[in-house]
Amino acid sequence: MNILITGAWKYTQEEWNALAAMGHTLLYMPEESGPLPTCLPDGTPAGYEWVEGVIANRLFLTHPLSAFPNLRYIQLTSAGLDRVPTEEIAARGITLRGARGVYSIPMAEYALWGVLSICKGADRFAGNRAAHRWEKQTHLRELWGKRVLVVGCGRVGRACAERFAAMGCSVTGVTPHPQTPGQGDAPFRAVFTPDRLDDCLPGADILILSCALTADTRHLLDSRRLALLPEGAVVVNLSRGAVADTEALTAALMPTPAGDPAHLGGAVLDVFEEEPLPPEHPLWDCPGVVLTPHNAFAGEGNRQRLFACIREGLEEQAQ
Image 1 (spheres, rainbow, N blue to C red):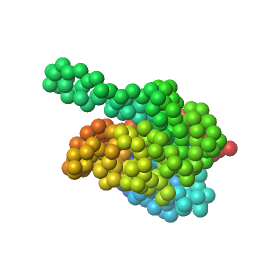
Image 2: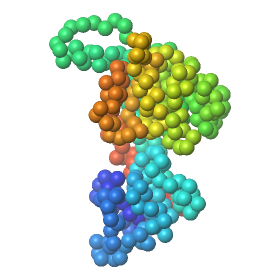
Image 3: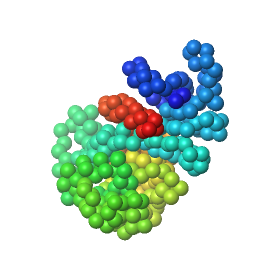
Image 4: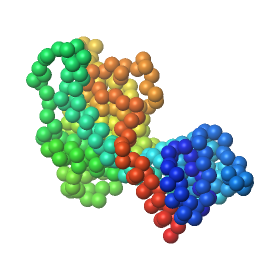
């Protein structure tokens, strides 16, 4: 297969050689938004017609799918599929693979770290350390016995459930196609379909969003659903920023104009509707918020897992 590899995959020479040894002809494109290479290193003409497969991330945001008449295989380096025209891909019968399972370990660890940071007052202790202030914090929360609701029970959601369950939490899932609706599916105590989401929210001390961004999940967490969460609940967003209504989420994290406490007890936010998050955005200064720059995916095992995913997909495609 003629495969275009973009700069979204930082391959090693060994990995390049391994794909070439499988019989694939490879062409590298450093910048996904840049011009497509017109020839191979040996001078063989390339271009859009040459491409049969791609390993990319944001390529189709700047290069229309229709420009690739012979494309039949897409391997994304991201787990989400919201940056590609999925309907057009399906209509053309093109095989589409996301990086399933590649980032689930670091993202689940991030979720646990973020929630523990809030529960254990990490910001307060860090501030006291910077000020050389010896001040005990006796009003700290525990994870033990907390009720966790995971929306999106794929690889990331399941990895989160495993870790929170190990901390003594009771974990419930909401996902479009549960294997056992309403029954236990370890590590979940119960798994429900999305139509039961509103019923589940009042019982969630911790809400973890790990679902794909689709037309149905855009602003899934709006002001109405935020109000269904119990006071002091913590929201974790690992999916895409637009799954939560930013304005409504920000309001739920801020004390009221009358001086009453915020409805939410904190949030762990790695994704935002606008990225980078503008420096003047009030989320930067919201109390009890762990805020990171779309960084939850990072982990030392990603390279090995991503190459295994790429190789597995190409082997399946060859069958």
